[in-house]
Amino acid sequence: MSSTAGQVIRCKAAVAWEAGKPLVVEEVELAPPQAMEVRLKILFTSLCHTDVYFWEAKGQTPLFPRIFGHEAGGIVESVGEGVTDLKPGDHVLPVFTGECGDCRHCKSEESNMCDLLRINTDRGVMLNDGKTRFSINGQPIYHFVGTSTFSEYTVVHVGCVAKINPAAPLDKVCVLSCGISTGLGATLNVAKPTKGSTVAIFGLGAVGLAAAEGARIAGASRIIGVDLNSKRFEEAKNFGCTEFVNPKDHDKPVQEVLAEMTNGGVDRSVECTGSINAMISAFECVHDGWGVAVLVGVPNKDDAFKTHPMNLLNERTLKGTFFGNYKPRSDLPSVVEKYMNKELELEKFITHEVPFSEINTAFEYMLRGEGLRCIIRMDA
Ligand code: NAD
Ligand code: ZN
Image (cartoon, rainbow, N blue to C red; front, side, top):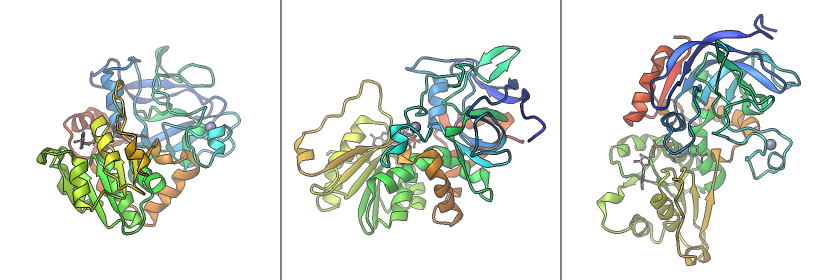
């Protein structure tokens, strides 16, 4: 047991006091983990769009003060009552969605949508007692998606913690706790392209490039990147993209352009934009008879998907996925192994690094659309 087990820890955390205002790094108090919870020392965290989206709080119920952050790597400091499969010193990735192991979803081989621990962006408290573990002078500071990794220490439900190979460098594999696994899994677990097939990737941000990386790993021979921003194309070559289409360069729908390029349609498509138009194009561009389209992007509140039912009758399949269909605890360790075996490259996703004291710079990079992932070093 560590010397801090069972005690309140005082540590630095980046607190979001108000929507859209720079985070403030300050000392917080963190209570010990309760039943089925673990306390983690976070070593590296990175910034994902979901953090920025909820920090801006446009279009959802704002919940402040809050500690954001959900892509991270760390070490178990102490465990609460009932935790048997993790111990202090274990290397872990916290995940914004969980795996309780007992519900119908966790027992199904097909689903990763755990009833108990699936993502909940509105909840700012822990499940065990409906309270926060973070506070400043007695004032509760809310959690974010059960992870709150913009802190030197955090408390997480054990079902949201993947134990990984201790030899894996946490400053690299931390990016697997959200976006990269989402894109990779969307291709490898859901679209499942066969060797030699043609895959279209809509949206070449971090998630789409991870989806392209999945297509490369699966042995697709043509990987067509589709993005409205032509600046993305050069970078996408490093992720296996062989061809590019900017819908703005054409005066017909992009699905028609793709059908012409591929003799009737692509074998698989993966949509990683969040744009409803791209979702419809991604579906309509797959070949009849066998084509499969997978939606990953999160749409706007009032969006509706519209296509002629004939497109489905003609034997096209439309699917959607959440966190790349990976079950966090069961499956993430093997994704880390893919990196360790050099099957999967992560370095190319990491374009920036800042010390914790400069966490707001990571927000600026993302708001400017600069780079892919910025690693925040907690010890600096
Ligand atoms: P990003 O903003 O970095 O990249 C999106 C890209 O899509 C941009 O390059 C943009 O130019 C492009 N784009 C936008 N509209 C387009 C259109 N109509 N046609 C072609 N390209 C278009 O975002 P990201 O971090 O890579 O995330 C991508 C999406 O995945 C987001 O919607 C995000 O919310 C979602 N996401 C989903 C899950 C899940 O589990 N389903 C998990 C994480 C992220
Ligand atoms: Zn479950």
